[in-house]
Length: 475
Image 1 (tube, helix red, strand yellow):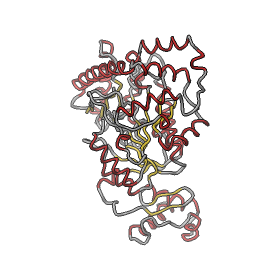
Image 2 (tube, one colour):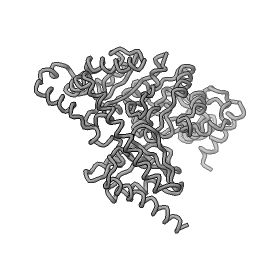
Image 3 (cartoon, helix red, strand yellow):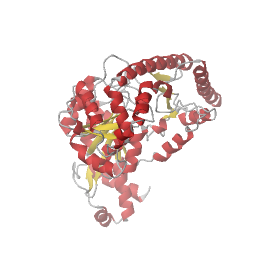
Image 4 (cartoon, rainbow, N blue to C red):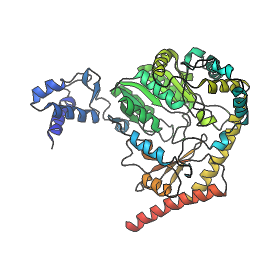
């Protein structure tokens, strides 16, 4: 046993026996080294081991403190995980580079089929605007963005019952930029944030870049989010902010019910914890009623709502925003030193497009197409992969989340398919802890179902089935 493990076990007993109390500060690294006779490195490793076990937490420039032990034996607490060091950016970079070539079938991309996003009215608007350059060159491209565009976005919130004024809105270079700016405005290196166990890789990348410690909670099989685990996580750790995706979740696809959102809002208010809501798929619902955002339930300005036009108008229109409220000024200051604001030409084109309700007509047609295509993908894959694989279907968006047998590594499937110029998204992209449970994959099913698409799906089915067969032979 290493010296650090021995020391960690000794200190663990002090906590479990109540000698060190909840929220009590531990001796500093240097003081503990003097007390124990171990080196500073050994003490640091021991403290980090206790932190990984969920027994202590750290505060920047303040030291280490004992975590409340009264919830440590609860079964839900076993699913609350600490991820003190995130290393996912390199994996995401390599993956995105691998699916970039034009000859790759983009079933792994996060954007809908560009054929569905083409809007003749938007192109016409661009053309007309380009002939009158002075109209958009007069507007400076600085934070918080074009006032007229912010006013239109604020009106969309008001229609949903969320009282909003243009000064609440900050225009960003897409949804990911909105998330990054919000997280940067609300955290410092070493802070604890809470994520869903499985979530869009951009959240993990942001945590890695900002040097944050991540607490994860599991998805609930019925409700999407486990409220008991959520409450125990914020009781146990000094969570600075939560970053959650509750509508049309990427990659799984679920939408959390209004009742669960209401209960979640009560917990946020009770514990005074902030939430950054990633809601870039908010308009891709299938029902007649748009799902509510957490901002609707926010009574204490604890929620920053982030969204974007890029998933409905295409990757070329990376225009997003943050409903930032009281954090608007802080986000603008950070934005001024990094991404500035979106090109004024694009902002003006969107103003014209949104003002004439072309966007609403486009969304209606887009939702119908996505609903049809996703159902056809689901029916085909269910017919050919059941019962060996479980396929999650939720009535929104354009992703299918497929659970392979436990012994199948989705990275292996991804590499096999990439050799055939087909991309899928393996689960390692969405969960930093999918080391022992990497048997999930995401498929983009936004494409019109035809003979070519069916042929590609048959290749995916063959790849999965042959892998399962090979494993059975070897066993």
